[in-house]
Length: 162
Image (tube, rainbow, N blue to C red; front, side, top):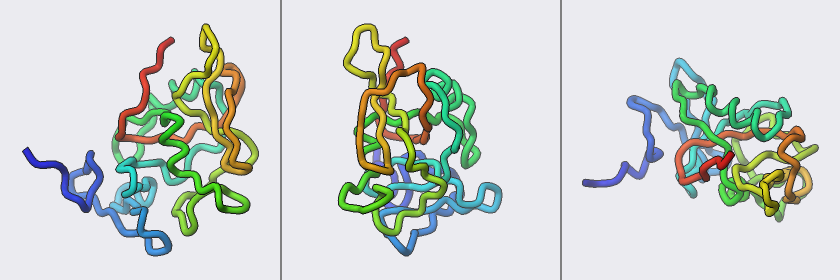
């Protein structure tokens, strides 16, 4: 059995058109006629991200529930990224927004943390790790607090132990 073609993500959508993103060839943007440009494939990690995540802050639990109902690119199965996956988008050498030069993402907030699925180091786990693309900091965030959710598809993720 062979793996997926090198010119599409591991969960390729039949008939999908992944257009190379000229400012940064690490990324491709999903551009079918029905869901124009709402997904970004990171060729470095194989993950598919929302191009423009929600700008609404939610608790960690509410963010997970939000991910369960999310439809993007005509697909469900979205989730919060593991902390390592979220950090894979970060470019700490950048001033301002800590994303790679020429990235295709839109509406990325720089005033607070984005949730990860990675639980904090407390027992019981009342915190989860978050990353702030504005200042490049990561921290344990109280799960009942409100932060942003940037959903991903593919990869390994984490189970949500409630």
